[in-house]
Image 1 (tube, rainbow, N blue to C red):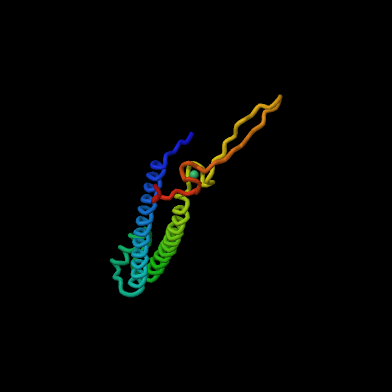
Image 2: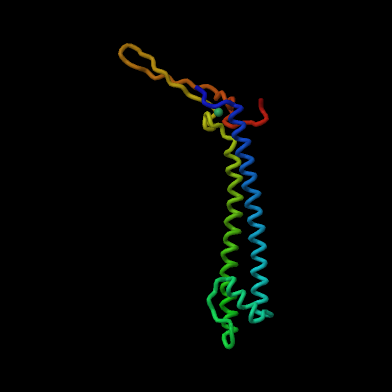
Length: 161
Ligand SMILES: [Zn+2]
């Protein structure tokens, strides 16, 4: 017995494709946000090294969760710790960009698999075994026929009737 109908299978594939698209859009937005942060971190490093006032340095240290003294004579030490902390954020952010880019690439594989026929699991045919009694023995007879859902293709063609 066929547990699938072609229409249900197509509906499921369309849903899955639209989920994948949405997923991809979301990850692309994520990458844009991460790239914005990366640029911001680079600007922070520049201005920490150059033109930040003491109160701005204090704010920056707080923002980065650094518990350090931002006052004379520790100003350059404070700057050093701040820059180091921002560099760590830069590395983490670069990793996350790489990871997300990788996940986007994996979506292409998933997209390929979406079309695999769930009825025959991509085999394109179905086998049936029935048993024939002959003398005192039982002989299994296996027959195969084209899968009724994908019509012997193994994949679902969304445009085919
Ligand atoms: Zn099939």
